[in-house]
Length: 269
Length: 311
Image 1 (tube, rainbow over the protein chains, first blue to last red):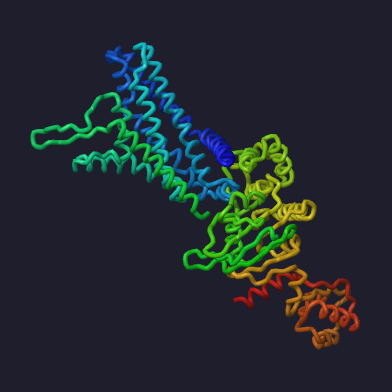
Image 2: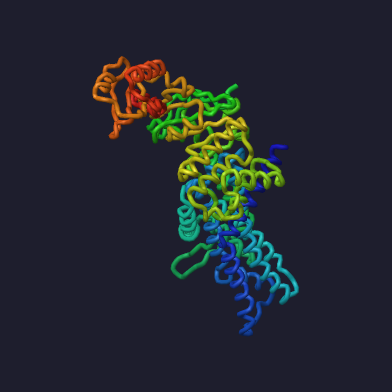
């Protein structure tokens, strides 16, 4: 028990100094600026042009979360480019020669870096949702439960994207390679795989980006599958279900982190 | 109980044998120089001792604790420099040492005092709040030494600690290491390819070539294994042709060279201490006015001889 507490203390130290890294590298300020500009644009532009307001808080929340697809894009960009070099740079820039020779378990370092990458991006996302929540409460005098659920699911999605990138960061010795590869996979390859699976009539819940769609789709009560007849053939459209998505995203977090820690534990410097 | 011990320690990189059955013990308070040419296996040994790589065979122990099985416990009292370590460019010197010190469990109030001490010791006292990204190569090497000392370890494992430093910096670092060994009684295992550095700092030396330990003993004992040594004799006035002829005929003399001004003789002597003593006596008997007489670069000769033999 005392040993576990000691390891947690060490993890907290790693988290603290890693967060300092993110704050000093200034990427986080860019992310916050983008989120804030998007949030303000979503709230203020319709008001400026006297556009009709959505009928209820839930619809407002759906529009806000879907706005310009910024949430999905920024989650992937931040998730991959904040974490890509977390582990890889320890080998690339030889900082492992000072961090790995300490009496600290390597898994503690991996988990500390993971948490430290998650927290600043989660803060930026939280600010985005906070602006939405304030606007929603001001206009409708309520906060939609679905909006809160979307926020929590978004945090889970972010956690899974970061864990997934962490895996590549552990495998490669170049941070930029880990970032670009995970970005391409999440932004391009996974959506293509989802598309192919849908055509094959397979529910693509195992694909992270498909599971992550629950962040925006939580506002609707879609069935798992819709059959759309186009006039020539019947097209099946799948929607991620809440529980399935949570399980899928959690699985990505757990599996990616377990593999990452094993890889780093046995990786030679 | 030895402080550092390796038992049949072997490391392959693919098919390349980097270290072969290394059996080495370093006792408490020893200062051991680990010498070898580039690619001899010095850094590999140090990485194995610091659990940065896994052995293909054999084990390494620090304070009797298996490094591979219990790295946390084994490395607790070790300060190390491995290669030229990297630092986080966005952190200051103080933040680096604070981070590493806290990871080692030093209370925050103690760390701050200790940071000042070690940074002053390595000559970075004025750079305490400077971001490491702005440091020169020499400053980074000094910081590397500071991070190895932050927790006041009993054992220092140093991989070419003076690399990247200018001559003055190298001298300062040597003095620091000497002080740590002599005054603070720390056990030091220092790898280097600078023979002069090792000769200045260490009492014992381990010679390595192509992953094989060639010799491990006190420098004074190793001198005894020399088949020949070079003696440098400075003369008040150049020797005559007859005296040079007689020198060539002396019992222990293999050959000699003479400096352009004729006032320094470099004599290759067959044998060790006794042969050198006899030579000095003979040179005086020949009427040479000797102002100094010294055995030059002994360790280098031992090293070259052993490396040549092992090739």
